[in-house]
Length: 265
Image (cartoon, rainbow, N blue to C red):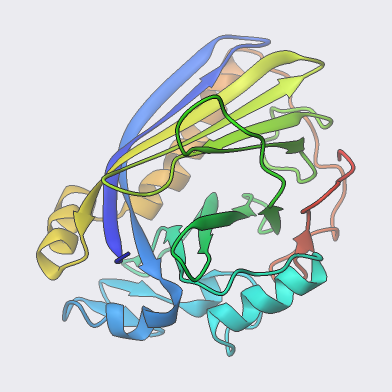
């Protein structure tokens, strides 16, 4: 397994109380967390823990940025009562572009020593500057294929247009030439929202990275702009606003683990 760049599209659909749908193109990186400093030397335009046109900075993710990412994952898994597999771990995320970073969600793909995908950790961020980690360990079996499916209660406030008490249904393909992630949200058995991320693999190289940077020179700014633009459209459609349930429960430096059996927020 090798690090890579994945490019493709993200689609969001809302079914209730108003129909709303949009999609946009983007790219993400898929990096071996044990090789981050080395991987960010792929180009003179890239940097690790320092400013550049594109950079990976430890402070953009949960935990103590002075510690290696695997150490932070091990500590966080222990707090969540999870045994971290001993194989490679890859991070699917946005880097920092032109000094700006925002990741609605980053995924850590955790493999065993034989290279089999065992679990996924989703690091979710909202626009209030808060973060929460979902350790996805209790998978459901699918009729066919090697996809991983997890169903669990939502326990972190993300969208101001989704009520608390939802049930998440997430499906992940095993990353290969293609990568697909789908998130469905249900309320009292009724589908409310879904998102589908469909990406295609390219090798991790300076050429591939430069190509994507030319296509999306400020992809993280595009993400946050799209979030606020779509929020405005929902307001115009008179979708009710759900107020934040309270401050102080989640923060960048006080990560709430929400793996296992969780109460709905």
